[in-house]
Image (cartoon, rainbow, N blue to C red):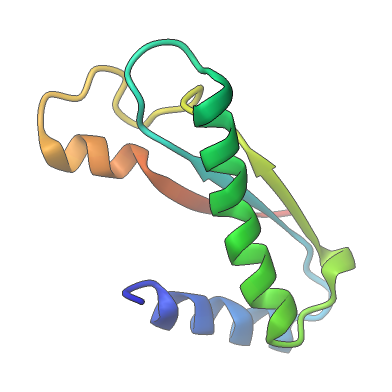
Length: 95
C-alpha cells in the first residue's frame, strides 16, 4: 500500500511517454549467496509491479521484468536495518 503513490506516478509517466520501454528489476536482502528462494522473491517483486502497470493500461510489450535475487545489493555488508531495507527494492530502468 505504501508504494501505490509511486506506482501511480510511474504509470502516469509511462502513459504520457508511450515511446519509453522499461525494465523492472527486483532485489532482495538475504544473507549468503544467491539461492532459489532469493531469486523467486525478487522475480515475484518485479512481476507484481509489472502486473500493476499492465492492469492500469500499460502495454506489456513495453515492460521487461527481471529478478536479481541478492546479487546486486546497495549495501554489500549491511550493518543497520535501513541498509537491509535498501537492499529490498524494485528499481526501474528506462531502456
